[in-house]
Image (cartoon, rainbow, N blue to C red; front, side, top):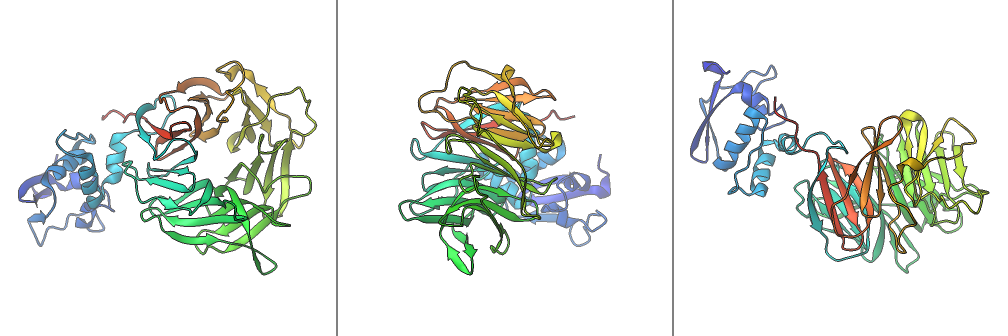
Amino acid sequence: MGIQKDRVRFNVGGKIFETTASTLAVAGRNSFFGAMFDENWNLQTENSLEFFIDRNPNCFSILLDLLRTGELCIPSHIPEKLLYREAQFYGLLDHVRAAKWGPFDGNRVRFSRAVTGQAPGDGTAIRAGPDGGCCVAHGSIVHVYDWMLQELPPINLDYQRVNDIGWIDAETVVAAACERLGRGGGGASLFGVTTGELQHRFQVTHEDQVKSYTAGALSFSSDYKIFSSCKGRSNEYGVGVWDQITGQQIDFYYEPIGWSLGDADRLQWLDNTNCLLVATLFPRKDNCYISLLDFREKNMVWSWSDIGAPTTDERRVRDAIAMEESSSICVVNEYEDLGFMDLRSSSANVRWCSRSRLMKGKMPDEPCYPKLALHEGQLFSSMNDSISVFSGPDWVLTSSLRQSLGGSICDFSIGGDRLFALHSEENVFDIWEAPPPPVT
């Protein structure tokens, strides 16, 4: 409870509020209220006993109650967008987000809402942003949504089909990989999230000449590197590496003879091993190729392919993801059987786990192939119109997420404590959130 000298008075838009310095300190150093304290967290009130703020008093009341109780209660007559705008002014968006949903847990998430895209079909990828927003690749357009799910200016790739997208910075930048239709080239580019404007193009240079290439899958490392699979002419097949800050090409891994890197479906940077997972999967290629690349030694340190597998084996790998904690790679086939390979073995075989199967029979004639994601020790796998959640050391099926009538799930992504699932037929994406933790 605040004492007399701890009390603070505000005049917000003509309405008087009183609170305590200890309540305001909950907002944190980077907030509007944090600037009212000195470096020792002592309130600086020598110059004024009352602070005037020319903002909306109704929203201020809601945000002040949030600081007091940790709960967010929005009256029906207050538009959420107005409240979020005011929260952004006071630097309280993180507090609002924390009050709206709790830490992500695939077994606790609940369907929140569905967002309809601009046109049915042709959705290729969805990527969750670290702040709870997302971006959706749809033909040659990338639609960007902030955490309030308000659509920002779209990114227009000018008749270039988007192959992959990824967030670099939560506030300002998104990257897109694209293929110029009918023009024999393309590349990777950097765009501003808030404006949709092009900021930088990433070039591939070989022997002092700029080469035309098609960029495929993307990945990003914690030390500000961008990785992209590159498919070009002559010796340009492989994986390119660029510096996120300068945009300069800093490395290129050329495709080994008899292997497939330039058309990769998935790239995944592994921080603990400083290696890049590269997976080229069926049906893009007749055979699957999965490898780990060490760029320090320019060496492929681990590899697997289904070349030579029995022709009767229909367990074609559709997606792959590395799990560093267990030193293994998880793969999934068209039946949603999970398979595991030991990275510590130079001759790894897939150990299939059929107990995870949810449905029998083959996939539809025009399927969306299963996708995998790993988040906070849980494994997620999409299959037709649902997403399965696997937990525990034995990856037991613990829950299933199914909601929209938009058709099969062609892609999904987890970030900012939300799960986004993109449906192919109607270009609808669903948002799943965990309920907020109880206030203690």
